[in-house]
Length: 445
Image (cartoon, rainbow, N blue to C red; front, side, top):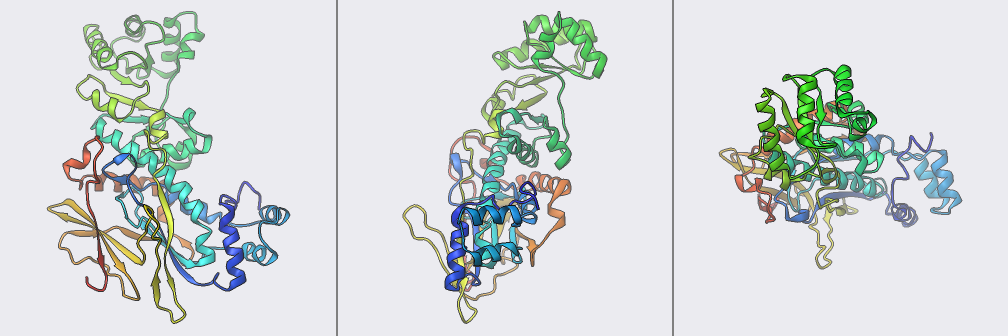
């Protein structure tokens, strides 16, 4: 096994030193429940979007320790020989239940629940958080942009603003949350996301004249292409574009200027030239607020880069991974929780439901088993749905949740459940979560 194939070292040292100590004191085999959740929604947003679970499953399948990984741990004296032997045979054999990818979440939502021995479950903390925190942060921003854009298409084009592998993950998360395409070809190949792109300003600057650049692009891509018209002057660029391509030109792109004003001027100019069907795409450092400000402008599509791949001001979802229950010697479950100021967690195994009235979501209902109680499959509410599905059973990954098919299913699920939100949840301003999180005792439910 090569270092490139393994994800075993995509973790923090203290995960392994805890296993080292647990193997020594006999607690490594205790059955445990770990929970990944967010205490709050970053940026005072009104809801969050789960993204990354499909990627987590694919990385879990490669979470192994081969000769190279074990040699590094041994040479650097990270753990002892007994732990090296444990890691050599490591295969996650537990279960993982989670919110469907694309699902909405709120503070306290048990987004991912990992059950297994302490040793095999604790080691997944860093891997799970690094994926879910980044992907969900991108999805949290992307869904707001999608809502602001309405029926107008959005393209993700932020690869140059993120690390190379993060760029691919960001394109995936943005697509799940409502974007329709990406400029990133690896995202297209890996995840089946539609790709788009024509030419940059360097293309125009390469040629002796703007007209030469436009003619060459049309010769290569046809008149359905989109011409970038702001390398020099926008008005002259539009005039040249229509002179070269004719009134059937597919589109023009604007990447600078006061976009509401410029878009209106370009629309008027195109219509006056007879190019009434030519579309206008705008780019230029857009975020959800600038997209919303363009709602009344004659814009047909948006391209978004920096703001979406960086979470639009909230680059992490702020999720944590905590031990919430463990089995005692008699087999009963013991709830455990932190009580640290500002970082308290709620112990116990949990089942999650979204209550609704007339199809509109009203609360996040979390049923908590403090002891050995059986968690319900249904919440006893006339119009509620369960939020959790099993994505790993006995170490076996749900094949439907990974790959391009998993991405397509996550996107469909997200767009469907977003329709359940109350109208107040769609606003972009800072506010409390759109739904309250209600915890109830399983014994009393």
